[in-house]
Length: 119
Image 1 (cartoon, rainbow, N blue to C red):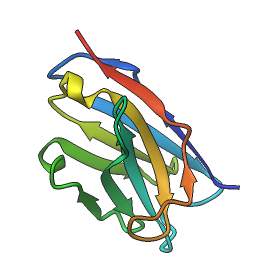
Image 2: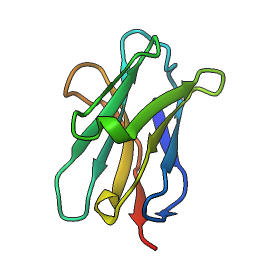
Image 3: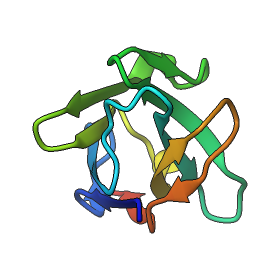
């Protein structure tokens, strides 16, 4: 059974960097069949794909967030991480990590973690 668990601060101040980690169990993030994504959902809005890291460490980002987003991994811990810089209250959202078997597809989700940007 594949499980993903997000962790990180629930409150971030404006202009700071949001940092989240996703711990994966039941699969390896170096498996070539899958990519590992970060997706968010602001209150009252739809899901927004933020970016992905694939089995070999290559990354891809949403064009609208690319300048502020970085996804990295720690293969020894089977974790991948999200950093979003220069946050504003508009970055308040539930942040999910997920496993992607293909473009625009997700087969396993983390439970999500609410991050609020506020002073």
